[in-house]
Length: 187
Ligand SMILES: [Zn+2]
Image 1 (tube, protein in one colour):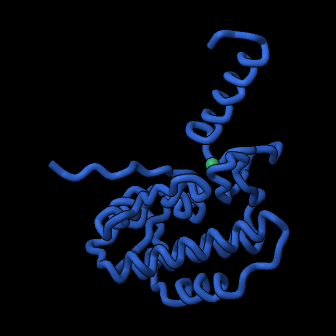
Image 2: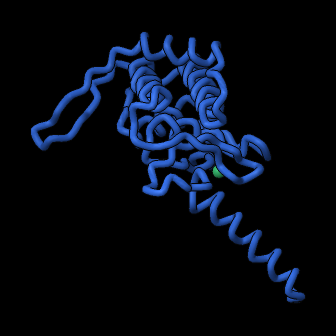
């Protein structure tokens, strides 16, 4: 039996999907890439499959993840980007040697030789968002135990939660119970 690991919270934006491999940062944090194999699994489901992953590469990945989180959080709050985070993002972007490949079906694939190349793609994605090149808005999740930075591409740009199925749902339930208490429901 394989050990049970927390499932992934996959979003549509690569860089913030990656930062969501650590959730509940303000509550009881859940590490969703606890082992090198889980990082490899995450990369595979994110279109960045690699053949192997070491502990040192997992550490590089987590360093990049926290740097993207720090930079995105600052940007979402209108603050200056932390220098150390910018340096890590640039280092990982510079170290990547991924090649974008156009398939005959008109899809983009990545040709990768290892985890460093995959991290380069993620770093470049973060740079595009932080540089304002993508249509959307960096925001922070309204859940007090989460506060994750996410990229809001909704038409109205008023998305409040990083993930509707988890943070959004929990918040709605909390509000429902609060309303019941106020209206004298026995619960
Ligand atoms: Zn959230």
